[in-house]
Image (cartoon, rainbow, N blue to C red; front, side, top):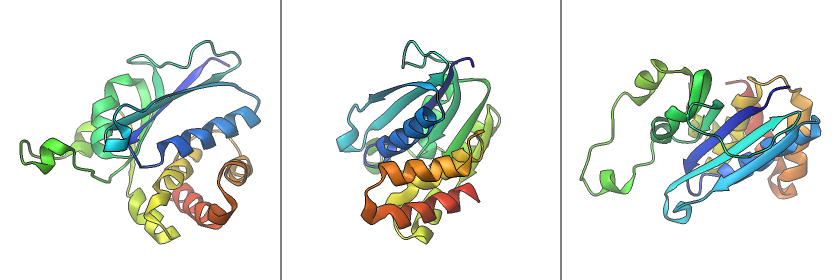
Length: 189
C-alpha cells in the first residue's frame, strides 16, 4: 500500500493528541507501518495544533508537506481554512463546525470570517458536522475528539470493532462509556 497521510488540526485543549493516539493505535493494529508527529506550538494558550499521521507498508517520514494530505480531520472550522493548502487534490476534509475565536477576533481587531464551510466546500470534499452538539449529547463537550474519530471511521476501510478496541486500549477506564457513546454518535452522524 502506498503511504497515506492524515492531518489532525485544531486548537490547544481540544483533544487532538488523544485523537492521534486513537488513530495511530488502530492503524498499527491493522498491520500498517505508522509514523506520528505532533506540533504543539502555542497549544496551551489556545493556539493552533497539528498532528501528522502517515501510514502504509513502509513509511519513512512523519511529515506531511503542502498538497500531500489525503485527509484533514479538523476540530475547528477556521483551522480547516488555515490548513486546507495541505490537502491533496481530491482529498477529504472532515471538520467540526464549531468556532473558537482567536485572539484578534476576541479583541475586535478583525471579524471572524464568514461562510467558511461553503468556501471550503468549493475547494475540497468536505464533511462538516456539529461535533460539539454530538459530544454534549454523549455526555461531555470534551468528547468532540472521539466524535470526530467516529466520523472519520466511516470514511476508512477499517472495521468498527477495531476502532472500539482502540478506544478500549487508549482511553482511561472511567471515560470508556462516554467515549464509546461519542464514537457511535460520530460514526452515525
